[in-house]
Image (cartoon, rainbow, N blue to C red):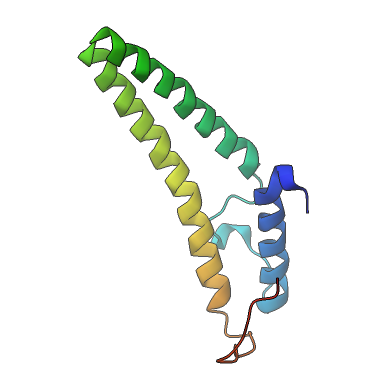
Length: 114
């Protein structure tokens, strides 16, 4: 697994599992994640925007500029919502995959491999 692009790896694994668990195969139109998009780049972009705005928020706070603080907070909130949407897509696709019913039963005393 490429540690620098683990969301792409996750997306590839999900795509592969959808192909194997669903008789109709993989249909990207029925999935929440945009499988043609580069998820790691999108996440990095939103994190960088939040980082930049946090610095602007810090400066505005030091300057006592509450209008600039409010504007920065609104933008940070917007970018954080965009990030949360990406994670909601991951949750939705994983839930859909798990509900396929084509999984073995997890034993009661199962321990996750280390």
